[in-house]
Image 1 (cartoon, one colour):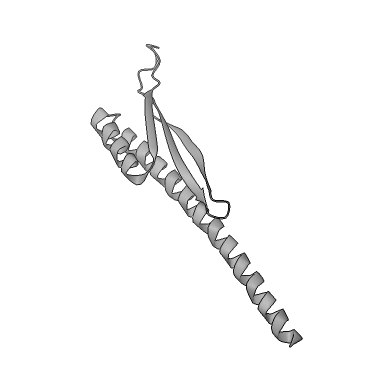
Image 2: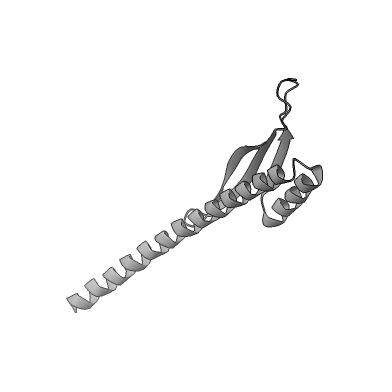
Length: 112
């Protein structure tokens, strides 16, 4: 009888560890997806030479995916440097299933 109880406790502990591991894997996947999307947005903006239509399209697509995208012009009035520069900030949320809370993170970068 003692062996059955120990086996039952072992199975419960293994299930608990598996559940916690799955929560961390899910959170990591959410973070990786957001960072990949942020990189793709910067690439699209740079490839379009900072076209406003592409920026608007990326903002709408980010809203559909549950992200918040902010693109701000950061070009200086320096006549020596005529390159366009945009600050791209993506805010995304990561649900923490164990605690029952949602954490918000940001990915920042520049499109030139």
